[in-house]
Length: 161
Image 1 (tube, rainbow, N blue to C red):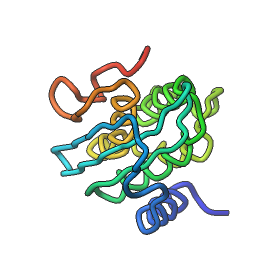
Image 2: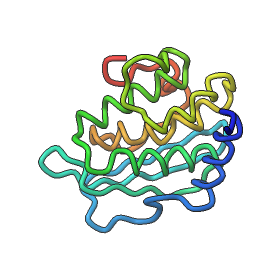
Image 3: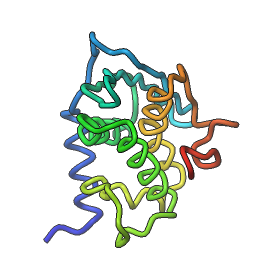
Image 4: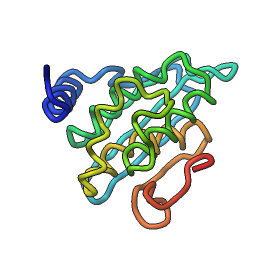
């Protein structure tokens, strides 16, 4: 059986090499740009939101492997979900990566728990959270978001967090 660290590395490498939902989305009606100045990550998230459901989602940009893998897995997980379900996932993912979510508790993250180890790598937490922070912005019609200063997801509440 594969240990957690090996599984994390394998998942990150797979999603970095073959990102899901990467590219442009012509029928998007919501979008946001996210930037992590510390790492240099820059993402654009586009969503087609209709009747409260995420019918389609894409991302593109330049980012490190952790950020790209997180964005890839995030888009696959939230596609077809309601905005409310996506917001719950955003909050749970954030809490997991900063060590506030117990993995044996009731949550909706599924395979996304592979990112739980980033809580032990403080400089990489922002890389993993950036796509989620950007998704939250897009869902709430905020054009740009950053992981620095007053917008730092480590210190700013997302939803009810």
